[in-house]
Image 1 (cartoon, rainbow, N blue to C red):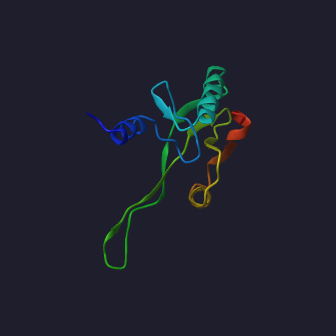
Image 2 (cartoon, one colour):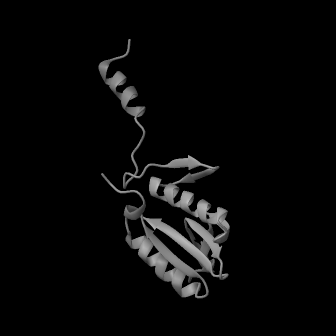
Image 3 (cartoon, rainbow, N blue to C red):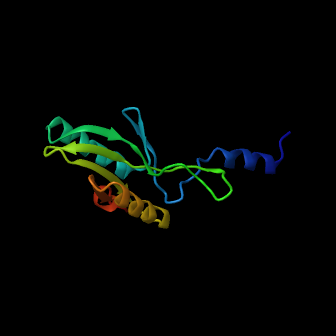
Length: 136
C-alpha cells in the first residue's frame, strides 16, 4: 500500500516543469520554438516568404562567436556558439539575423556584442516579445 507521501510525490512528478521565464514551448513545422512569441514571429516570416519579401528563411541558425582555442596550459577551450532564432535574406540581398527576446540577460547582451564585432557585414534585429504576444 502506498503511503500518502509516496502518492503526493508521484502526483507532483507529473506536473510539467515551468521554464525560468514562464515561456511556453511550441512545436510546429518540425521546429520547437522556445516561446509563443517566437512561434508567432515565425508565422509572420512564413507569410513574408510567401509574398516573396524574404528568401532562404532559416530557423535556429547557429553562429560561432569565438573559434576553438588553447588556454595557457595547452588545453583546448570550446568554441563559443550562439543559436539565434531566425536568419534570412531580404529583397536587397542583405543577410538578416533576428532574435525574439522577452528578457535580456547578461549572457545575451554579451553575445550580441560579440556577434556585432565579428559579423560586420550582416544585419541584426532584436524583436521584443511583448510586441508579438501581449502578456496578460
